[in-house]
Amino acid sequence: MEFAALGAWVVAAAGGAHLLVIWLANGGPSAKVTRFPTLVVAGHPLAAVAGLAVWIGYLVTARAEYAWLARAALLVVTLQGFMLFTRWLVGRGGRHARGAEQAFPAAAVAVHGAVAVTTFVLVFLSAVDVTRA
Image (tube, rainbow, N blue to C red; front, side):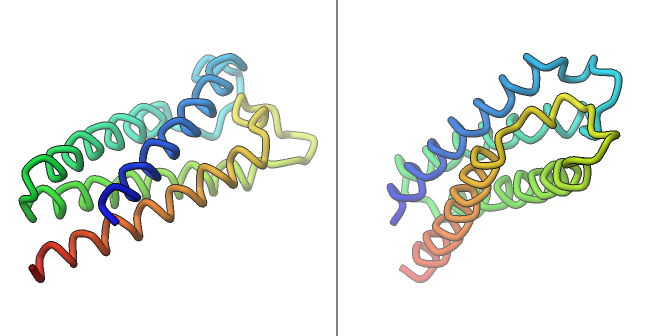
């Protein structure tokens, strides 16, 4: 389960990187209108990469503290991601939807979110499992 979580985390990161490139290519933070706060856009991937590094540390050492720390980082990432998702969703369509995030393909957003939820569940279950052992 731990390596499935790692795989899901890497796939989610790749999907997120794809979305970030699309956002930056369409003006990103310099766009006239954007619903995405720059700090959250920067913090979301940074927290995800930091959590992934801690998760790899857990896989190397098998220390339960690392698993729970990675899960805590993933909780922050999830909350930031949910904020970005809701802002993207609210701005979808309509005549005033002009932000750089409107270029996101809905399928890419859906896959990134689904894999992220899977990662969150797998990391949580792994952390619970290693704590019981």
